[in-house]
Length: 280
Ligand code: NAD
Image (tube, rainbow, N blue to C red; front, side):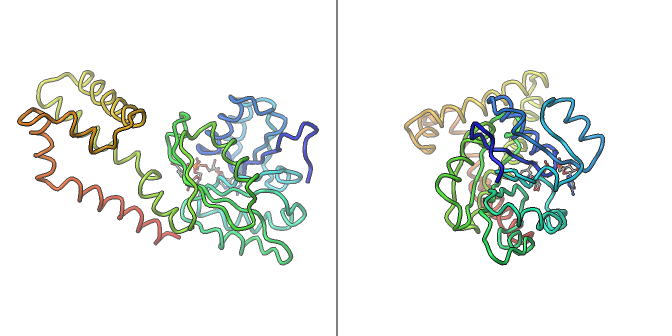
């Protein structure tokens, strides 16, 4: 393993798309030395764009070149190409068995990756993570699963690295719970976008300008989430506190409960969880 003189890990990203950029950008903002960051990217246009945006970060079209001597390798390609990427990198990774491997690919189990790695005489330390798109603005929520050989130190290192883009980092004990994380937070931003769309449209239908309806909706969603995070009350108590008997909020809540909103959202989370299991 090649470590830097100051013991800051060398991190190699395989694929430099949206998620890789979120993490790489977060690390740069947090002062991770650029000389300790590398990425490989197949598309010339994307590689050139990223090189110009992050000068000093080593880039290459060759996955092997960036992985050689890296302390941490982050697989940030689409799930469909992960098999080709891992099998192609296996000989180089075999020469660097202590490198910590982190996979962002949705729906790909760690057993499949270890299988593709085809390492006979060692088991690579491998962490699977499920981030969500708000990571792109440093507000992500991420679920993580570590294989049995991953050390506490490697887990803490991963938390420090991902802490630059994710506010919440939850380790799950069983890998199947990553599917549940997908159902709750991985796909979750879209649920809130849909609800905000509906509330904004209702505001417009009831006479507000589009601009006002949108601004009021977004800030209400943000304010509610921030309040729930900062309050010691649970969500039910918070809801009851703003729901006066016979008041306006009660009228709205009754309308939503009449349409069985709790079951609709529960079914949605389970549908995403089940789909994630099917894709695995
Ligand atoms: P993306 O398409 O933006 O990035 C993937 C990059 O990999 C592309 O730039 C592509 O050119 C490059 N690439 C493809 N094949 C390559 C190869 N053989 N070698 C090197 N580079 C190669 O995708 P993304 O949205 O950043 O997603 C990356 C991973 O993150 C996916 O596996 C996805 O499942 C996972 N993920 C994404 C989200 C999300 O919300 N975007 C959430 C959770 C997990």
